[in-house]
Length: 596
Image (cartoon, rainbow, N blue to C red; front, side, top):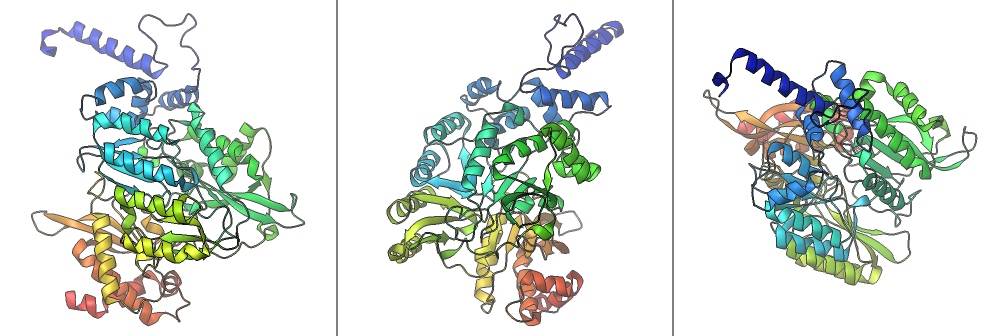
């Protein structure tokens, strides 16, 4: 009813509203309670974030909506209100959807009119009773299934609003939490899936991952970053952790005699990985003792908190501060926070690490402990029903050491399986419809949630991944080496399509002059990880989903025809051939010529 006010009254109201907004942006002062000396200095655990926001505004920047929402009501302080509103069954407003993510709940409408809960499982390891307990919670409060994620984590879907807090309460009863699993926070801490049981490893990552997990949970100032943040610990073993895709990666190395530091096992620091933005973490030259990882990671984070972009969500990751400053400037500011110089070691003084087995997460492998094995189980694009989860938990309890080890490949391992019970484990797994002997394509098949459960995804990634796997298994029977195939639904790249041998990212494909679209993908090739990290190169845009199985077949046939023997990997063949030549070779294959 603005027409009921005269010009002077309108100006007064505009000034009044601006004053309230200014108060909120400079500390949330109550009306009429300005301190005697002017605006007070922010204090408490959120002060570091408030100061960073104020610095942005004073420099002429406009805070993005998420930063405004944090200031209007901290997601932890608003928790009781969120519970009361959710208990009525109502969907959250956008700003409350963001706040709920601090507690691990994501409202995923319109894909599903419900919450998804993402957990925190340091190093991806669960006890059998926790695994079956999550299944019980998914039955009581969710859709009766769970997904393994690409951060060695679990997510449960179809949780209605009134069931959100009971689900979170149930996690606490299991000794688990979802706190900080979403929004602008540090995500699940990953570590070597075979930590403590791998004969090649230099260091058991489990204590480090658990310690950093607890460091985060007990320091509220580490919540509310400019954007999400990933940290991973690699123990130097046979199975990659993909730490090069993380903002911070700690890699166990052996330093030789003659270096600037004492010989022995150290952690090498790599920074700036974010594969969805086409960048992998780079070696900083810095090494540190394992017990110093938390303090150094904390300092790195605080530099990011103070200097990350709070205006543009597309540029708000740590990579962009590193791009603007350079690594040496960033590390110099980290050293100021630590009050000391970080140690650096020339790569010539680092002992070469042992080799990788990219598929050690599948099948039977002997442990460091004589007579025991880990057994990797393939999950079809990471999905399990709750009945399957309980049955798998029983296998872990009866035939292994009682643990379930999740991996970044959307599957899991049984550990501590005696030689005499390996056959039983394989048979019981097969009876559930799973396998420990994956085909060359299915063993490396990774897919994000897709548009069946995520509003950002352009395509049904999990459904299309299974179609492609079935198609390739039936038609390319001569494929005798593993090939990684990653399908992701959007630019967030949760399935890390850029590091797959073949990567697909969801796209809407225009199929008529009227602008009608169908689901499809852009296709990249030549990505890699572990001992050959690389961002893939796009070779086709806007391929209809129905045509993708044929494109993948053509790529594989071009590889099988042109490789220099089975020892040449798909990635090595792609690098030698070049993406343009590979595209031409693929398009000359009969499967694509027939479709042309």
